[in-house]
Image (tube, rainbow, N blue to C red; front, side, top):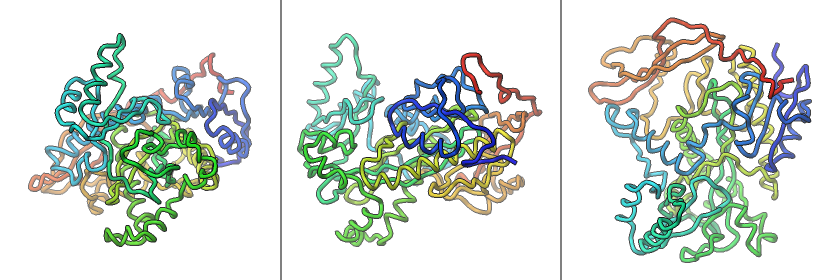
Length: 480
């Protein structure tokens, strides 16, 4: 019988690169009986701060685990996230045949333009007001590096003209995003919310959500200030504030503290929200948006046994309690510099590894993946495993509410009943136990209302022998 969790019949080796949460990762793995490998190319699991430190060419599928999906830049760069969300909300699931979605992208993602695209740049120049506040960001950076504010059309045109005169035009590396000018403030300070999206495996996909914490600025918010410490909430910048040392414990709040504050200040009563709004509706909203982000990237994420990723998603609330997605981080900070993070991060990292290793071991040995016994505080969002739960616990943004009757019908593979009909869809390849089957997703729609109802996969060809999971060790990369 397969042993999952902390007890193994043989010692496994791990490699850690970088300085982000090394102690947490090492402590969690050594508690399982794993040991640190002296050879950086000989490992069963590699946790790297930077994706480029992983040799994907010599990765041994089904025998090794690595903590970054190589194609995840489709959501972890700002331009990639913009492209993925635009494409997802412009797909047939959301537009055209299946009817208009109940929500538009602009309702949770600030208006954004790529400066490197001449059409988008000209469109931005044509709509930006003389005194409007926008924010310019590098597409592939973190910790607030390279970010600055644009105060109206003159700043934008001046910056574009300046960049065009340089020998190396870097406009293609930047996006400009509409600034949220009415943020909700806590004791007069700006904040954002960090939550976690765990893609525990990509073959099959298994996706989970973990609630997070709030990051607050040290100083009082001033919309007219040019100081980035006033506008950006990440800890890298806040540490530069002269009062950070004395105030650092108050720059990180729990979700419960947010709920208590909103009740105390009367914000929930003012907007007709229940006193459990944060822990219930807001949490569900964050889960729903996180799942939407994943679905927008799913077709671009490389499917390999052993790929996983822990993403940090950042959100903001405005004064009307609307939720705004800001960005997705591929290497969320795992530093425990205050009590809230000391309580949250170690058990989350521990559970992340528990889930990832359990799913990996079950898939590698051909065992059913569900139920996943390691899940404690993470919440299940989605799986493409054959033995997955009957239905996902929530619906995607832009899709109509799921109908339980149709969901059960799909799981039992019963033919759709009139008046529903199946729309065409692309063929894809699925594999299990060494065989591959060409399948196609079938969209069921009501010709009268033209509404999307459900989807399933059907075999469309003969089964073929698949050898992709039979991996021969590469001389450059020992499996031990």
